[in-house]
Length: 49
Image (tube, rainbow, N blue to C red):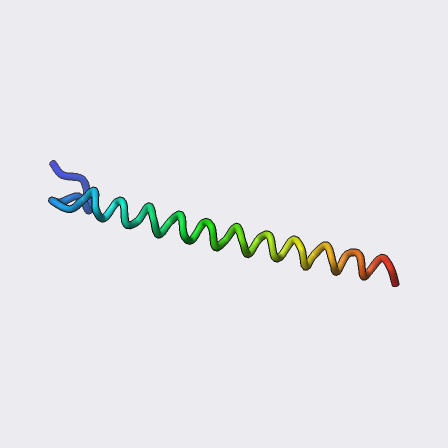
């Protein structure tokens, strides 16, 4: 019995999903980095007042 989503082009779909997943993970990592940077600046500014 074939697995769900795996037809003749199953590996193509899987590859496409892997690429999209990596793109989204990279985007999330960039957002986390920016958020950490903003958080550090706020922390420094708060302590300097």
